[in-house]
Image (tube, rainbow, N blue to C red):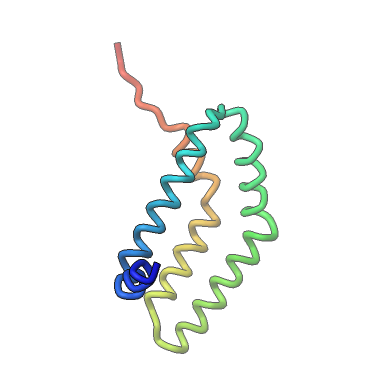
Amino acid sequence: MSKIITFIKNHKKTTATLSVIMTFLLGTGAAFATGGTTADFSPVFTEVMALLEGDIGRIITACAVGWGFIQILQQNWIQVIGSFLGALLLINLEDILDSLFTAAITIPI
């Protein structure tokens, strides 16, 4: 056990990367095992979109803009740009997701 703890202390980046990969693999394995249909996804998608476009989305956007103004005062422009792009993403999230899920390639016959 002490060898494992020593390895984790000495290889923090490797351990963090492995934990993220394992979490992703376990999550996708559980999702594939359930074998859900799109009928299961639609109500959840509608609910999440309603939350992000409603009061919660406005609060997140206001916090992002406020954080951007604070970072402008501290001269951290990368976080300002990130906050601005995050706010743009929240504003246009429904259009982006609709275009992703309805994208199709037509093949003329």
